[in-house]
Amino acid sequence: MKEKSYNNPNKIYVSVKAVFYPDGGFKPISLVWEDGREYEIDRVTDIRRAASLKAGGTGIRYTCKVAGKEVYLFLEEDRWFMERKGG
Image 1: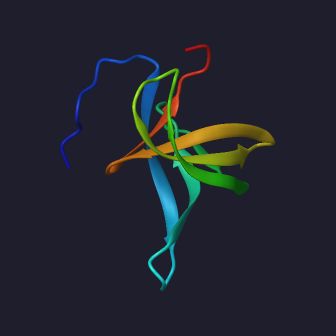
Image 2 (image 1 turned 180 degrees about the horizontal axis):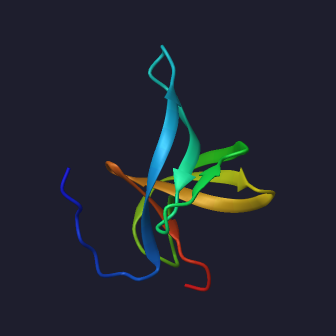
């Protein structure tokens, strides 16, 4: 699949592994950061439609616990992204 380009340095597109359920639902279980490191998602605490004020864009925001920290993972149409720290 060809990588799409983007110009916002605060928006990091990531690869996500997910579990898909028979009822059609799914849950992300890990993500791969831009440097290739994979992080396990310990828990998803909230799922809602929201905008990213730091990185721009809107979609379904997954509030996740990763290594004890709360992070936002966004599903924007057919792509996953996260906000760069300090962005």
